[in-house]
Structures are given as structure tokens and as C-alpha cells.
Image (cartoon, rainbow, N blue to C red; front, top):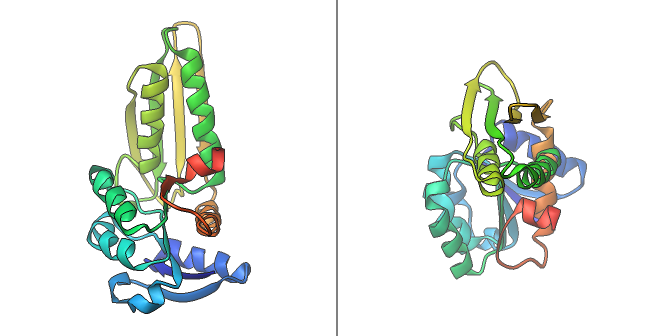
Amino acid sequence: MKVIISGYGRMGHMIEGVLLERGIQIAACSEDVCAVDPALARECVCIDFTTPDAFKANYKFLAANFKAVVVGTTGWDEIRPQVIAEFESCETPMIYSANFSIGVNAMFAAVEKVSSILRGHGYVPHIEETHHIHKLDAPSGTAKVLASMVSEGLGVTPDITSVREGEVPGIHIVKFKSEVDKIKICHEAFSRQGLAEGAVAAALMTEGLTGVHEFKEILLG
């Protein structure tokens, strides 16, 4: 497998390190993926960690030219149907996620289960998320996914509190409070390494894959 990294910031460098550690060939690290030779792109899986605006501008090129694409960029929910339709039309496999951390995806499973158990028992949900000051979207994509899960399982849409401070890699807390008790489910990232590891795992999963998938669907079955 050959990989092109789209977005060569902090996450791009971390993904590069994971790929090198695993002996996976890196064809290019690009700040402008649309400048990549389409002939090269067709041989490569693209791992995209750019910005919402960059992904919105680039997704048609990604769908039309790459062997497969892994998307860790968030902040494009409003065009998700168009993006999925584009990749399906081009028959380009895509795996996307608000968070590629294996631990966060385990949290998704826990929140989904707990929400369904608590439905109808008077619990009020709330989500808190804290990230570094460089993060462009608020609430985080992960918080939005958690909110969707809670809303579907519990039947109550939670409020989300977003905090941006320092260099915090990421903390997500889901609370369920009733008159008699409170439940907290928390994930705290110590670094962005978990995101990079998960994104590379997703790139490996694209071998033989067809269609568009959320990472949690593949990971959790």
C-alpha cells in the first residue's frame, strides 16, 4: 500500500511517523492535494486531515482520483450527503470518522448502549468537550456524534459545552443525570497519537473495501 497524506500539519506529521514505523510507503505529503498527479493518486490511499474548507474544496478531486480515501477532517456535516454521493458515484472507497481513536470508538459503543438502557427513566444528558485552542470547529465532530447517539438512544437531545484552552489533545465527557444518581462516561486523549494510529488502521482496511463507511461501523461491526 502507498499513502499520500493530505494536510501536513500536526496530524499529518504524526501520521507520517506511524506510517514510517510500520514500513508503509509514503508517496507524498501535500498541503495541496489537488496538485498531486492523478496517475500517482490512482495508486495511493489518501489520508486527509486538513480543514473543513479545504476538504469541501477537495473532496471531488479525492473521489475522482484516489484508490481510496480516509477522512479525519471534521466540520463538513452539512454536505455529507453530497460527499457520500460523490464517492459512491466514482466507486472510490472512503472511510470517515469524527475521531479515529480506538478508545473513542469504544466510548461510542458504551454511550450507545447506556443511552438505550436509560431511555424513559428520567435521565437528562449533557456533553462536555475540551480541545486545544487551534481546533477550528466547535462543538467537535466527536461531540456531535455522541450527541446524535444519545438523542437516538435516550430520546433526549443533549446540550453541548465546548471549551478551547491550551494544548489539550481532547477530552469528551457524556453525563446522564437523574433525581437519584449521575452517570459519567469519559475519554481523555493524552496525545493525538491515537488518532494517527486509527487513521493508519483505517487506511489498511480500505484494501478490498467498497462503498462509504464510518470507521466505527467497521471497527464495532
